Image: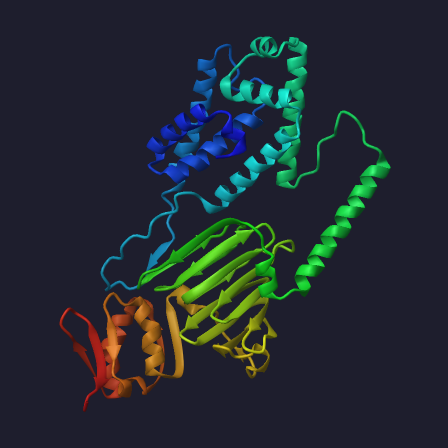
Length: 435
């Protein structure tokens, strides 16, 4: 439980039960409870303040109820896309219980408020929390602490200033003017140290390998494992505002740290549109290789031992392999790698006319083995598909619209001397006609 809530467990648990009933999800309720406390902590004087604790609690629960309603409205958003009109309806992917970007931001905001309050004298901190969360008035707080009402008012002003400054720092906004001016030499000295430290940290990250960055990443702030079923695509907004589209029958895990954004493609294909952030590199792992983003949109496809990296715009740096080499790609280039292959010695890059065309419902193949083509297309089929080794060696050139994939498969045998059989249970099998 958050340190900000620790002294008010009874109120917190009561509010948590209220929000769980409203949303049907305990994790969502915890996030909304954090936001409720944050709203109450940041509220301007006069908001929700009344003479009796019951009025304060009513205000607290009104804030929570409004946040729950907002969440339920957002929950209707979905990122799933079904691409084959002939296939059976897909099973629903579980909707996000919590908007990922808001969830991470709220955790960081509550931590910022806790930090601001943690630096206050104990009486000032206790006065603020009791006033905001228990609804105690200034007179009652003065009697509790044996001080004057004017002292309590000064304590509240000091605490509100600490909360305000903490939230300004969290938002990256300039600090508000303080009541007492600091010496100019002190401000310049501190600023110079921070600037030098920031530049040094950026240089260290730029020079380190992806593996070294991951090893020094520190605690995980947020993580998620995503998987799609055959014939399903998934759109996901990442905590920093970057966009991810996961191909059908694919799996990926992303993990966020204070100084590193990283993801691992476990199978299938994914497209990334990455928001630039000089303070937090973005690294994607796939098999034995890693791809560091230098501000770009790009796609990865992992097919067994083969990795394809294609850049739509911007630059990426591909690393890994037995020799640990590196190679940069720019917009319009793609590179195919095998497991353990050194990117620096992988041969020339290829020009690509389109990156991740599956996003638009198309796949194109030029003189590729049918084995490779069918493995790729099977991600979009609602039924199992198998083929004989002899059939898999046939070469195929085709541009396939995924919404008409089953029709294309029915026509394929006529042009390639194949037979399409429907096996018990509805599975399909392709083989040569004379097998």
